[in-house]
Length: 306
Image (cartoon, rainbow, N blue to C red; front, side, top):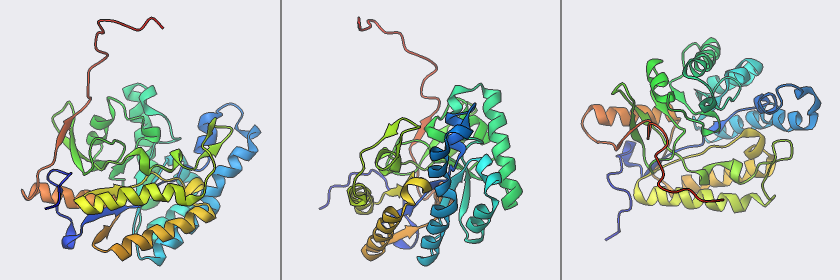
């Protein structure tokens, strides 16, 4: 008898063992303007590396998804939606989901509630203008989910968020209003920033290694999700994981998943709709987490001297 490490995994469509979405954060040069708001024009090399994600990597990723007949999810800052409408149209025409990812990749937990609302609404407007409909999914830039984020998402009709890592399977978040929304979680082990990103200007320099080292981690996480009925998604960036050798390794990972069988590949909005349907029909009950997790710092009985 196999020891079950996930309590109450949700049933996936057609008897699949797990659900998978290769989700990308398509940030392009929004990071350039975020890191260098006063002199972005001086950081030409940094901008070129980020622009690679829009001009070369994203079309390559779309081609890979088309080859495997996959529909997936890209989270895009509103500024990037306006900057690269042709890429967004190619994603939409391929049946892929455009999720909300801020306006200029702002760390929203550094802003007031009203400022966060303004950023949210500006991103919604940009996506709706190109796609014809508002986004239903959200991922906080830099995972900077604030104490206001959930309630603002609920106020604006979002169906799910994919910023947090509180479980191995989808769960519900309940805000101050008592309303609930789905969380489609991920872990840092499926984030390519910790594996590949080497940017001097951003002062983030991971050691340069063969793609296989990172994909060993991704494959191990997927294998565990498959074994126990879980869920696997990624936080990948075109300028990093869309580079030639890494894109080739991504193809190998997709083929590995297909060969393993019983995998449901879907954009996150379809996974969200499936889970919401299970809940509505009383066929499955999720874990519920109340947000924010605390109202402020807890008093400490002692603090370190240094």
